[in-house]
Every structure is written in C-alpha cells, then in structure tokens.
Length: 340
Image 1 (cartoon, rainbow, N blue to C red):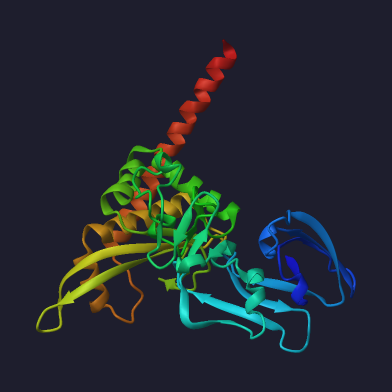
Image 2 (image 1 turned 180 degrees about the vertical axis):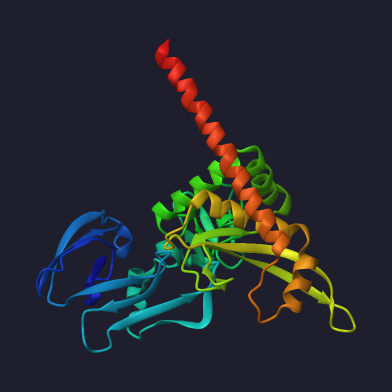
C-alpha cells in the first residue's frame, strides 16, 4: 500500500485522492475544500498540482493488519513513525513515535490498530471501523453491535469476544479468527462433527456453555514424547493453584486450555485425536485440584494418568463409532430416496 504527500506549504490542504509513484516528478490530484482559505466565496474544486518532491510511504503491518511502522523509500532516516500496541489496540507509552517535520503530514499514518482510522479530534483517540467507533483504552465499542443478534451470549459492546489474541473484528460487526482460513475451517468442522454425536454433544456443550473459559484448538508441531511414541494431540490447561501452609495444593480452578493437534504425524486421525483431547479438557475442568496435585507430584516427568488416558481413548472410540453409525443411516436414507 503506498500513498504520497507533497512537501510544499501551498499543497498541504485538502485530501489526496490519488498520487503517482511512477516517476521522480509526479502529478498529484487533490480535492480542495473551501476550508483551506479564508475567502468565503471560495468553492470546493478539483486541482492538479505539479510537485518536484513526491515521496512514497510504505505501511508495514502485522498479522492483524495493524500498521506498526511507516517508512519512506530513502536511505536517509527511512522510518517516518512507528507504534506498538497492547492486545486491545491501545498504543503503549513510550513505544510510539513520529519523526520531526512530519507532524503536519500525520494524516498519512492515521490508520492504526488493525489498519483502521485513528480519530484524535478533540482528544477522543478512538478507532473508526466502519460500522462503529472503538475505544482501545477500555477495549469496548462505543455503540451496540448492529448484528448483536448473531452473538446473543456476548455483550454488544465487547471487542473480539473479549479475546483479542485469537479473534479480531474487521468492521465492527463480524468476528474473525486469526490464522489460516483453511485450518480454522478444518478445526470448526472437527468440533461440529464431534458435536453431532450423543457422546460428543455432551462434552462440546459442557465446555462451551458450562465451563465458559477459553478453549483454543490449533494445529502445531508437538515435540513431547509419551511412552516412546510421538504424541498426536496435547492438552495444556491453565489452572490457578492455591497452596496450604505446607506448600501442598489446597484447591485449584480451571482457567481455560489450549489443545494442539499435530497433523504432521502419519497416524493423525482428526476426529479421534480431537475427541481425545476434548475429553482431557473436560476431565481437567471437572477436577482442576486433582490435576494440579498430579502435576506437582510428577513435576519434570511426562505428564499422564492411565485412567484418564483410557477414558479419553474410550470416548474417542465411542464418538467415531456413533459418527459412523449416523453417517451410515444418512447414506441409507439417500439410497431409499433414489429407489423411490
């Protein structure tokens, strides 16, 4: 993405609609508003201005589309400005800068968090997403979500379902997951298929509606070893622990989990592996104190529990069996329709 500006005092008014970056000299098309002059008879007009000093500015973005740095194509002081944000899009103190001499041209780097326009008029410091304004200081929208009915379990003012690490909102209306669209679609399809079975429906609904904690499923490389073979899936739960006077685990609470699936393994079978790890998540959410004690006892050892492993393996087998039966019945109904 490129945008040019003209370094002439007579050319600092209006809005750049288009600017060439083909030649050393360039033609810049401006829309002149009547506000740039004190003459009350002045009317808005299009005006083409010849510049001897056009420059190209490049915006460097991160995975969210947030503009982290603005640079110009020159070897002398190429960095025009930079910004660092917290997860909610608030610019961190001491981690933002605009080069001297660019203050009057600050409009070229007005796009900030997720690439949206930063509105600092009257000191509001909000981001305009198109459908509504967002306040990165509080992590809240300033008006109700126009599509709030799509997310009845969420506050219509919350940004990215209060999970800006893995979710973003491109226009103030719809939630999007960060990462490969193909991978996200695959993960969603696994959970959806597991939830179609009687056994799977119970666990999926339990984690979604009862636990109400962040359960993240993702693809990744697993290097952990268990009983001499490569692990296909791994559940890492976030558990806060309260210790007694002796330093032993008194009680603990479940604060979410990350399930990592390694589809690089030859034996990877998505429904079975995902079901197995979802069951582990349910086990740890059911009794976080037991798992905190277990983890403390076996610190430094490959973490596992034979009974829990057998239960998760049994659960995965039941889910696959019920899914196979369900799909078999579906095929039978299709055949019956064809015969009719």
